Amino acid sequence: MFDLGQFLASFRETLDWLSLKKKSRVVVALDTIGGRSRFQEGEVVKLIDSVSDAIVGVKLGLPFYLNLGPSTRDVIKHFQDLVFIADWKTADVPHVTRLIFENIFDLGFNAGIIHAFTGTKSMSEAVNAARSRGGDVIAVVAMSHEGSELVNSQMHVLADMAVKAGVGCFVAPSNNTSLIQELRAKHPSSKIFSPGVGAQGGEVKAPLRMGADYLIVGRLITDAPNPDDAARRVASESWI
Ligand code: FNU
Image (cartoon, rainbow, N blue to C red; front, side, top):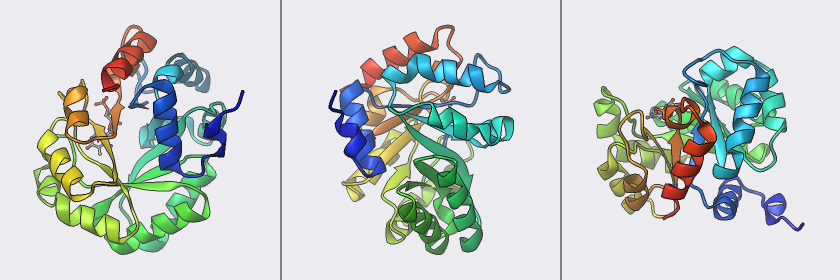
């Protein structure tokens, strides 16, 4: 069957295509499975397989990589119909940032997350590594947890620096929807990824109505007694 997804070059186009095809705006954050943070490759593949029809991508953080190591590449290779995002939240000097992002893309990830506070030079290096490998960069400009007031108060400064470096994708919190609204107003064509749904108090529809493009959802799905039911429920709610 003809699948347009195979011919789409960019991360953002692929995401939009997958979203339309699956009627979902959900990226799963795979930090735990059933509350456990140690798992085998087989369990990971089984879990992703069970939710893959209801999600557009998978976000893997540093705990995942420290657990599975280079087998992360094999997990990613397993799935054609999903994008993979490395949430290593890099915060380093420019030349090391470049090395980290080269490794992220060599592992097969489609995008990596960087802290915008590291500045334009570091973000530019991430963008250069991404461009040379067909990937993308997502900048954290606001966060979802208690204690993120400092970073959140600088959201616009951080987003402007990110844009200057060539970044067009942001992370902003679903449990602080006024920040999403402000970010969307200033950056109409950006992609906004919004974590904090469920376990951290954020809702599904509210951040999307305020301008988020994709929800990042972890424990609500991965720790549910039946992750595929949970993923399907969140996906259908996200399709507004
Ligand atoms: P869940 N995450 C977050 N808040 O929660 N990348 C942020 O501000 C941010 C993130 C990630 O609570 C977090 O690392 F920038 O179980 C975790 O992987 O739904 C996921 O989003 C939220 O997980």
